[in-house]
Image 1 (spheres, rainbow, N blue to C red):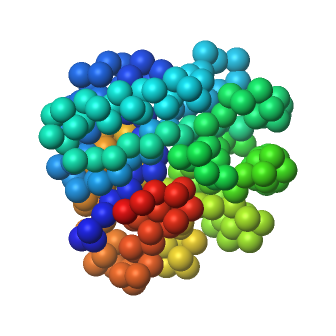
Image 2: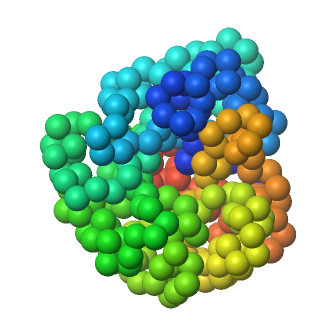
Length: 241
């Protein structure tokens, strides 16, 4: 295991999306995270069109509240603000209105798509986010059916400037053999930039990374695994280790 683990995708902020619904749930989630060896977490509440989304100010305030709660309870994790933005056609309007929260105030924005969105829409999403001045980070690429069927398209998107993330649970097979094989292929080609938990609760979809980290260090080049588990996130999102 490395010295650090950065969970760059989790839903730990209370009562802002379909993740944690209370500060007590958040406390239980981050206690699990600490036990997994996670040292840093970027809170990435959903941002969806026509939803009541938390503003960047609310996200930052809740991150501060969670940080204070963690410190009061002796939980040694540092927290940072972000969003998981469901791509939609007029995302520019949300950006211009200052409603999006990039990863820790950096020029990286995490976006997701529906599983059955076609490849043209994925590519358009990448290009649109770039036109706003951000580096697009694709959330859990193993969920998108066009990529799952044609893994070579991940390499094409990466060549177009996209950054690739997968969920820790997918890397260890919790999403099934096909998904694990897909993620394995990406890791072997060193196409994965980040890994997150996508945690939503402390029971199902808990913030677990230890098993994934142990698996990666066993199977892949240590320097690359260090980058995937914390180095890339620290560098790209301005997180001091």
